[in-house]
Figure 1 (spheres, rainbow, N blue to C red):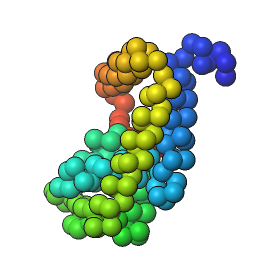
Figure 2: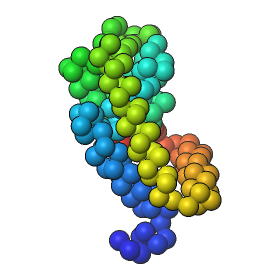
Figure 3: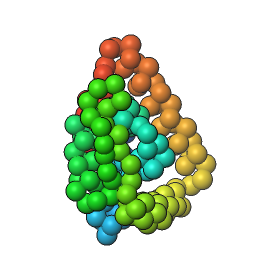
Figure 4: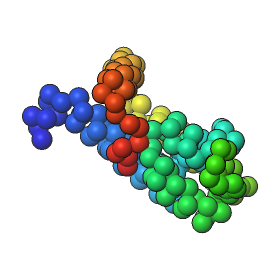
Length: 155
């Protein structure tokens, strides 16, 4: 593993992603949310007219992963959906309880982001953000050239 982490962009970004997600999940646990659910609540709040297919594309998640998390949120009464298959597809919106939980989640998210950022030297933090954007952009370009589809391997 040490050798892979020393030379492999994929391994390093995947390890970073999992470690950061685990930290965020620990902070969100008191709200009974995980990163995927928190992100989904935020996306629904920003664009409630989006269909599941559109959200899946935007979040780079498979529709099955998105639907699984959406089902959890629906069972908890945080979102409601209407519609179904077809041109417009199923559309979702936050309930009042969902809005309340999202507001509490945003405070946790700010704490998470601020605390994590404070642990990193400012210049390194900014360079790291630019680097991660560049890696993502390059992988998207190369994946499109290779015919890769979105939503293959999500957490």
